[in-house]
Each structure stands twice: as C-alpha cells, then as structure tokens.
Length: 250
Image 1: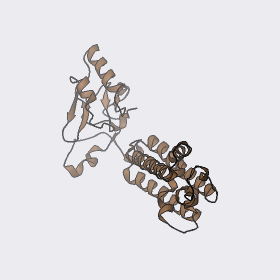
Image 2: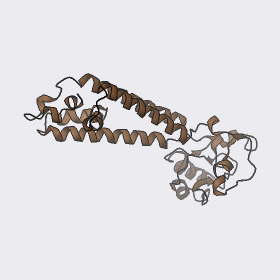
Image 3: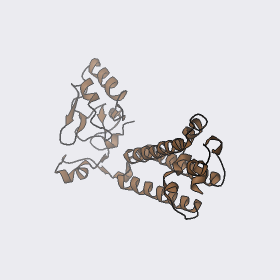
Image 4: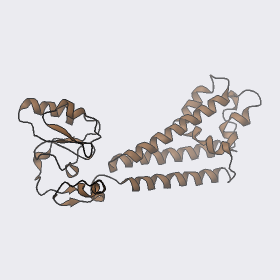
C-alpha cells in the first residue's frame, strides 16, 4: 500500500500519487500516459496531472493502484493537506547527485517512516548469519570441515524435503545430498537477498523472521541428526559416511 508520507515531491496534489516504492517498471506510465510521467533524473514515476475525467481515473486505477507490482500508486491523497503534511526528505536522499526538489513540507526522517535503511537491514542479516555460524560450530564441536560448511543447508526448510523425496528414488545418494544442499543454499541466498531489497519495515520484518526461523530449524535438524544413521537405508554400500548429511556432519 502506498505511503502518503513517502510521496514523490513532483506529484501534483490530488487523489493520486506515487511514492518511494516505484521501481521504474513503466506499467503505470504505459497505462495512464496522460497522467503519469518519469523523472529521468531519478528513474521514478509521478503523477504530473490528476485525472480530469472518468476514463483517466479508470486507467490510473487499473494500471496503477491495482496492478503496480510494488503498490507504489496511492489513491487516498485527497484525504491529506499536501502543503502541510510531512514528507520524506527527498533533497537529502539525492543530494549527492545534485538534485534539489526545492522547499518541502515538514520533513519526516527515514526512521520515522515505514521504510528501513539498507544499513540496518544489512546489520541484522549479518548478525543472524554470524549467530547461525557460531551455533553450527558448537553443534560440530568446533571441528570444521568442508562437509560441515557445505552440507548443513540440507536440513533447511527447502533442502530437506528435496532430500526426502529423492533419497528413496535415486540410488546415488551422493548426488541427492549435494543437490539438497544446493537447494538449501539457494533458499538462503534468495531469502537474504529479498530481505535486503525489502523497502518497508513490515515486509523486511516478516522476511527476517522467516530467515531466522529457517536458520534455527536448520541448526536443530543438524543437531538432532548428527549422530544418527538417518538416510543410510537409501545409500549404496560403503557410501554412508560420504553421502549421509548426518554422518558427514559428525
């Protein structure tokens, strides 16, 4: 949902506006060219003319409010006083690029808005991963190995189901385990990347909770399976220690 306090400063006052979530996808500009244009300096769309008839309003609703992939187009601007309501400090955001939008209403700081800074997101993700690494080191009795580094994601919420599905079917469990580890690592890379790219606090919070929960489940899975022979019934003779993730971690 678009945030009025993060509206782009070039928006013309009225019902419709575009906020900081715009990713320059061109959808609203193609759908409502009579009302939306692009600021080439920043790559951000904005409403340069409020709809003057029902057809223009319909196009902006359909191509903007309802279809914008990041929900950057708002339709509640007529509820606010554009001259006095706070706005994100766009001048500060683009100061290094020499862009000035002129006088702005009362400034709302980044930490007061619904956005979250990249520095804070990065710091939280780094802390989560460091904590997970330390926990895994404890599980492995501080004995590091390539298997101990590469194979733990087999027990991730993404890798483990793949291992369970493939183990009874494919006779080469070595391939199963490495494929499951690849899926697990891909899952964590994607989740961490999405967390860092999330602009809104609420979106980042949910993604970060999923990331931390996945890491905790992963560590718990490694700890519980470490000294078992889980999966050995699917392994070729004499491959248990090499292919079974539980044995490889022990």
